[in-house]
Amino acid sequence: MTARGDRTVRGDSRNGAAPRLGTVRHPLFARFYARLAPVLDVRAGIGAHRAELLTGLSGRVVEVGAGSGLNFPLYPAGVREVVAVEPEPRLRRAAVDAARKAAVPISVVPGLAEALPAADGEFDAAVVSLVLCSVRDPDRALAELRRVLRPGGELRFYEHVRAAGPAGAALQRALDRTVWPRLFGGCHTGRDTVAAIGAAGFVSVSHRRLRVPEGGVPTPVSAHVLGSARRP
Image (cartoon, rainbow, N blue to C red; front, side, top):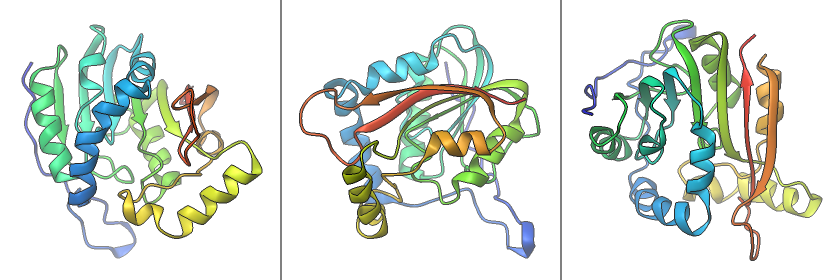
């Protein structure tokens, strides 16, 4: 199925700010991610978590932070359309190529998580996977996700999060204040994403914690959650 174009969408202009193109440029990280992510999907088991994340979806879906389109082959046949939002140009180009090979219709568009190019209540479901760690304002991004979902619409999330133990959480805080976001495209290792989803007004929040990879020495981003929530 062919993607329906890569159209330009302007960002938010509230509070007197000038409109911004829906673009965030991380060319070095994007090149690194595009090469490494498929390897981690296999070796760290992330691909299986992606498949579980998307199981049973149907209707119109918005995927925020689609990256290079690794989720695209995994969307089930019940999905009528996916609008995939990706602000990084290199990754967006890769996502357009991946969309052409997908079994469901996928439109790849530029846009920011904090100002989604969509109308209120437009989608039956929303998907975020390994993206809320890197958005500039996760609370505003979650507010946007809630806005574009219809009442009763479902949010599916798969994210790395704050470590459960104090030592791991302390290391994450130190990394997030210093080198990690600079090296990894704005990524933060230790956000409490599940709590943020509840605070954004989503209900029926359920999740399970994962360790990625399952064995070996843990990394600052080994604590993952996979779950769902609904707009009231």
